[in-house]
Every structure is written in C-alpha cells, then in structure tokens.
Image (cartoon, rainbow, N blue to C red; front, side, top):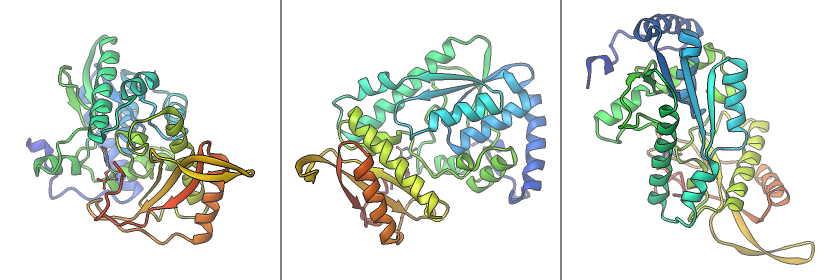
Length: 328
Ligand code: XMP
C-alpha cells in the first residue's frame, strides 16, 4: 500500500457543505496540477462513487475528461437516461454512450450459473471499455471512483478491489482517484455540494452485474424486463411512502420458474416477483424491516396489473444469514 493510500489521522471527517467545499477546492487544484492539459478517461456507471468522481473532474478540467457510459442492458429503469441528462445536458461533460445491450445479452443467453454470469458481465465490460478507449487519441489518465473502504478491504484481503469498469490490465494509464481517502457518507456530502441530484447521491447500493443477478438462472429479455419494471414500481412506492431513505436496500427478483394463476377467468402460467428489503450497516449481516402490510398489498396489486408475465408477488422474510441479500 502506498503512503498516499493512507488516510491521515488529522483528516477531518467531511460532514457539512462547508467542509465539502473546502475538499472540492483543494481537489480541483490537485487535479489540475496532476493532469495539466492531458486527457482523462472515466467509466461512468451512474453509481455514487463514479458520478462524484466525474463531477469533480468536470469542475477541475472540463472537456478534457471523457466519460464512457456502457449500457449493458442490466441497469435499472431510467438509469442510462439519467446519466446522459445529468452529465451531458446539465454538466456539459464529454460523454460517450455505448449501447452494448445486445452484446451482453447475447453472451449471457443460456448461461444459468451465477458466478459464470458475473464473470461474463465483468469481462465483457472490460472488453467494451477497452475498445472505446482504443478509439480515442491522447488519453494519459484513467479516473476511478475508488473510495477508502475499497482500499481497506483490498489491503485486508476481504475482497480484491475491482470497480466494474476499473483499470483494464492491458491499458497502460496513470490512475486518478480523487475520492480514494473518503468514506461513503463523505462521498455523498461532496456529491451534494457538487450539485448532483439526490436520486444519484443517495442511491442505494447496486451490484456491478446489475439486474443480471436478480433475473435468476439464464437471463431472458422478457423476464429481465419484468425485473426492471417491478423494481421501478417498488422504488416509486417506497419513495412515495417515505421508505426510500429508511430502508438500506430494496429491489425485486424474478426467479426462473412459473406458477399457475388466474386472470379474467382464464388460467395463467407466469412468473412470481419476489420483493426484497433489507437494513444493514455493512452488508455482512442484514435484517428485514417491517413494511406496512397495506403498502405490500398495493405494490402486489400494481405489479400483477402492470408487469407483463407476472401473476404472483412474494415477500422475502429472510435475514442474512441464512440468506444473502442478493439471490445470486
Ligand atoms: P450479498 O448478496 O452478498 O450482498 O449479501 C451484499 C451487498 O453486495 C452487493 N453485491 C454486489 N456488488 N458486485 C457488486 O458490485 C457483485 O457481484 C455483488 N453481489 C452482491 C449487494 O447488492 C449487497 O448490497
């Protein structure tokens, strides 16, 4: 571990807009002197860490930052559109949008083993990103939204640090990691001070393989659409009912089996949607919060009425352990 990867004991925790602004000003100066007139590339997933990193760099170096947003088809409803709206339209970033949906889904077709799915998604992401980087001239730096827990966890051997979209080994760039000494809550305070929307700054954690691990077994486009649509309904209802900021993570899963139902007097044979909501501090263990029953019923009504191919809604009552948070 390099000395620059150690957070100094004297570093004050960033808890207010004023402290965030001081951090931003200092970083802008440091980034300008590190980067000069060179070009910087960033894989922008739309997650908190990469979004805050991008917003900082846009402030510091403007259009010499090139953001690449890869849509792998496993993002939540409205996410690619939000990335484009915020970064290209509002912040004026140089943003390359890559529609790689068919490419990912074709590679994943028929693959049911969870770790194999993860591997394909991770590898394909690096390939797409490397191809985009190869099309660009004069890139010297690669920016990453590494945060302090990533450094601590890879030092402790808890997990190998890899941001999806992280440094492809065959690409020889210098790294720029402006938020690497910050904890997650500090990254959010900085993001807010940079003017990013709350929906981006207070976004719940979202796995790199995205909805792919919530469309269990072999992913099909129609079932993936059922995951995306049911997830959007759950998020909308949690936000409307004041639960969005209170529950740590919540999403839907659509397993790859069907059950019998009835609609308009006719037999159906369709998928169930599973609702998952958990609270946790560190994702190592998790509990299931009590959700008002009337709200669960309302969400079930909406999902069975609005999501194609779904006739049943279940609520996962299981803490971690014995279950993990994700189903795959
Ligand atoms: P589990 O399912 O292991 O999840 O209880 C713990 C937390 O990690 C997230 N998660 C992932 N994040 N890539 C990620 O970037 C992954 O492959 C992955 N798998 C799980 C999960 O959403 C939860 O917040």
